Amino acid sequence: MLAAFEKEHRSQPLKVIGIECQGSSEAEIKTLAKDKGAEFTIVSNGEYPRKQISGIPRAFVFDHTGKEIYDGNPAGAEAAAATAVLAVPAIWFPADATFTKLKAQADQALSRKNLGQLLTSLRSLSQSTDDAEKTEAASIVQVLEGYASRRKDSLKASHDEDPEQYLATLDALAKEFAGDAVAAEAKAQKDKDLADPAFTKLRAGFKALAAQTKALAALAPCKACKAKSRKTGSVDCPECLKINADTVASVKKALVALQKKYEDTAVATKAAEMAGSL
Image (cartoon, rainbow, N blue to C red; front, side):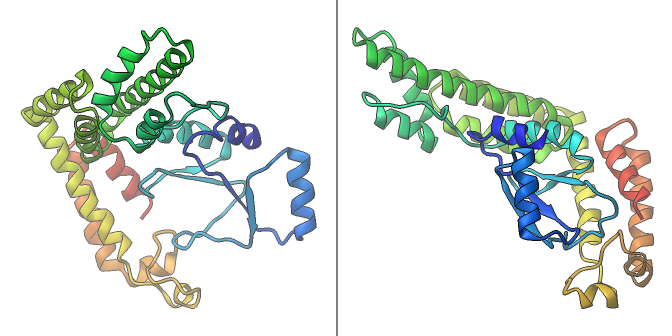
């Protein structure tokens, strides 16, 4: 399942890494990987520095900023990874794509510079009498429009789930597609949201939630965790929670308050999840 998923998304900005943690030999790992058709990197004796892992198989998905967005059964990881790819600020061409007439334009597209102006010139070239030039221009336009579409799709989720990322994406679109309708739409949408009291309140809620997340990330490690060279404590470690009891209690109180203030929003949901893990 994971092997097929990795192959399907190989041309996209997605990296799959497997970690074997049951003491198998290198030969056994290679044999199993071959049998399953897994061609991605597999390492042994790995561990999550801030979590105690109980139960396998287990998968983690991180977005392009390094933030963990999924922790659970590998069956659910594929959907999370596919969603994360939508938000990656990158452009890619199909593995079999080649450019001879418009290589400079293809390289510019990959660099994500002056995409608005590039689209305008490519749309003109897509009417060229030179069939090769016309085909390459149409191919690059399709990739750029697909990139803009993916970025817009990512906005639908981040508007209510990550306001700061949402605004950053709008700013990126406006900058990258300056001179094109995509940029104008992004600027107009940002102005509309910043003038919306509900969005402003939600944004404040996520900032308050981030403050509590930061507090938990700075917990002092217990003796056992220090022995494992961990610089911070873990909410999955009972001893870490015990020696940081005052901080944990304060965070719990703040999270309960956030649940009440932001009822029926993603802030309340995330606050409840955090409180439940303590």
